[in-house]
Image (tube, rainbow, N blue to C red; front, top):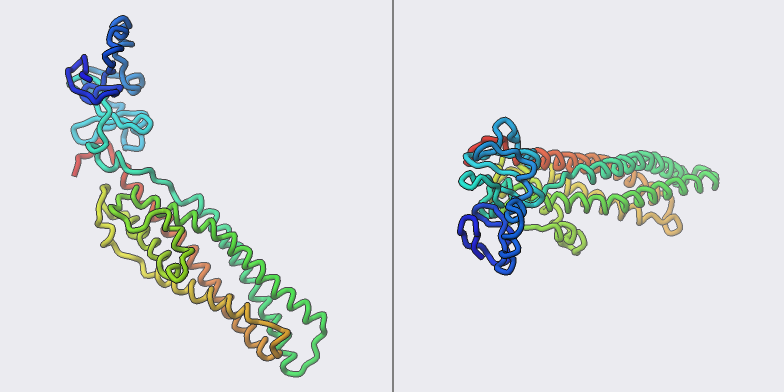
Amino acid sequence: MVCSHCGTDAPEGSGFCVNCGRGLFAAGQATEAERLPAAAAAPNPPLDAVLPITGTSPVPGREAARWSEAASKPFRYGDAWYQRSGETTYRWNSANSAWAPEMEGQLPFFMRRPGFTSLRTPAIWLYALFGVFALLTLVAAISDVLYFAVYDDIANGEFVKSSDMDSAETFFNGMKGFQSLVVVGIVPFFLWWTRRATCNVRALGAAAPEFGPGWAIGWWFVPFANWVQPVRVLNQAWRASDPGLPAAETDGWRRTRLTPLLPIWWVAYQVVSAVWTTVWGSIDPKAMDARDIANLTSAVALLDVLMLGVTGLTIWVVFALTRRQDQANARFDIRGGSSPS
């Protein structure tokens, strides 16, 4: 196909000329188009309807201050003008006084990058669930102490009412059940948050990331690999979310600093949760004597206190990475009039 307005060759089936932005017609449509009014025969891109034009450039004084406003106002970057309409970015062709779709490869990265979605929604759910878990763990620590006291008295030869023993055991096991239930509820929200953080890595300019959204979830379910890979996924998200990186696609994210709190949190989580589950699950009043039960219960009480610390660290990880990604995303909202670096 050849544009009848400027003579530029265009791919077969194209709707608009890549040079002047005016409408194209196939050979069989040319006769019909010639019978239409001029405005219909050469339709303008959608932006012409919303952008008032003065001479050969968008109206001065109406330009977007930042790229985020380019859906409603023209945006100046260097010596060129741009505007978005849906998924398409148009560039002002001053020679033809028209907006023309710009090829994606010709756009700076901040105009063509994948979409970014803040982690705040899954983070809010996690704050609430971790808050509930922390409260339950605090109450569970009290139940641990009461359960320990009962069996410590029995081990020391003191008389304990069967009703007191039953109440302490019901309280102890009930709190552990509630804790486990909330942990199960946390899992899908934490996976949601992790996957979204990984999806954002490319939007934040990370070139060739090692982990994609699928494996951000999948590694949690691979035996042995789930001891190491999930934290590596979060390490990648942390590095790629450095607000100090340029607003461009770069592999410089691999050399950014990693906070030491991430590996500390991960090791603490793995050790405390594994020991907590093992010790609590090993308590068997029917097969153990009172002293063994008292000793194990005291260990569970200590582990519940440590679990509170791990929960606090986990809340910090969620908060810090969520805020870090929002800050990193803000650097792509380029000011109008900026020059390409």
